[in-house]
Image (cartoon, rainbow, N blue to C red; front, side, top):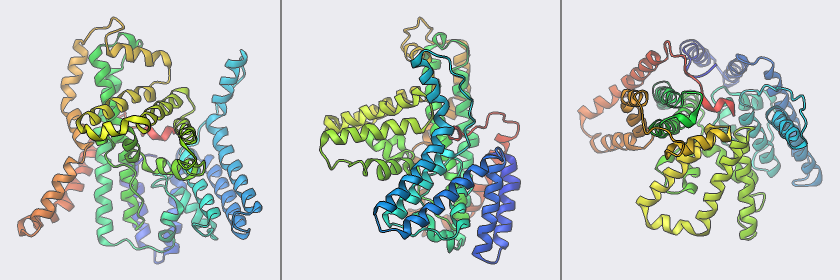
Length: 475
C-alpha cells in the first residue's frame, strides 16, 4: 500500500483518523495506530510483519538489559554488541546476502547457486530507527521504554515505517505517550499531506514518465544527446519530488494526530556546495550517519587523515545503504571525493563566487544521479558518452522533440516547486498584508480550498495512472 493510492486516500486513512479521533484515551488511540500500522505493513508482505515484531522484541529486551547495567560498563557494551548483531545481521542477510555471494562467486570464478532473497519493505529505515533507540538508551539520552507496545508503535507507525524519515525515539517519545492534536496542527497536517500528495501524483510521476520515455530503447548508446540530458533532468526532479513528497505526507499525517516529525528536506537543489547539499537532502539519514558513525569514529577530532578516513567510511556506508549494488557504492564515494576536495581547498572559492558555486553544485549532483539510476557500468558509460555525442548518436530526433515539447511546462513547474520561491511568495503576502481584512478572508478560504483542490487534482492524476512507484521503497 502506498500513500498515493486511491484505496489509502479514500478508505484506509479516513477510517484510521475517524476511529482514532473517537477514542477516549491516549492508550486507546495508540492501540488504533498500532493496529492500523501493522495492517498497513502487512498489506504487501504479511510474513515480514513477524520480522519487524521480532526485531522490536529483541531491541526492547536489550534496551531494558542495558539500562540495568552500569553506564558504559562491559555488560552494557555487550548489550550494544548484541543489538548490532541482531539488527545489522538481519539487515545484512536480507539486503546484502545475495550481493555478497554473487561477488564472491565472481572473484572465485565459480557459479554459486545464489538464493533470491526478497527484501522486506522499509527494513533499512526501521532498522536504523531501532539502532538509534538502543544506542540512545546506552548513552543515557533516553530511558528504556518499559511498554513493548509503545516501542512497537514507534518503529511501525505507518506514517514513516516504509520510507522514512528516519525518526529517532528521543524526538517523539513524549508525544507517543502524551499528545493532543490542536486545530492548527490538524489544519497544517492536512495542508502538508495534500501538498505532498500533489508533488508525488502530479509532478513526480510525470517527471518519472518523461525520464522513462527519454531513456526508452534497448540501446542507450543510440539515444539522442537531448534525450539523455532531458531524461536525467527529469530523473533528478523525480527523485527529489518523489522522496520529499513522501516525507511531506508523513510529516502531515503525524501533525494530524499530534506527532511532530522533524523535517527531512530543505530545498537541496538551491545549495552552493556538496557539503551543503547533504545538509539539506535526506537530513534524517545524514544526521544518523553523523551521530552514530562519524562522531563515534572520532569525527574531525583526531587529525586530518583520520577525518578523511572517517568520511570515507560514512560515504561508503551511505552508498551501500541505498542498495546492494556497486553503482550505489560508487555514487556514495563520488560524493565523498567532492566533499574531500571542498574540505581541502575548494570551500573558500565556493564561498567567494556564489554564482559559480551553485552551477558547480547542480552539475555535480546532476551527473551523480547517473550513477544512482543505472546499475550497469555499460549503461553509465553509454549515457555519459551519449550526452556529449561521443557514441555517434544524433543531437535530437522527432520523438525526443515531441516528448519534450509536450512536457516542457511540467518540467519548468517541477523546477520551480523544487525551490522555495512559492513558499517565500506566500510568506511575503501573509506577513505583509495580514492586517488587511480581505487578505485575511482570502487566506482563511485558501487554507480550506487549496488542499481540497490539490486532493481533487491528485485524484484525477491517479485515476488510471499505471505509473505510481515510490522510488525509496526499494531502499
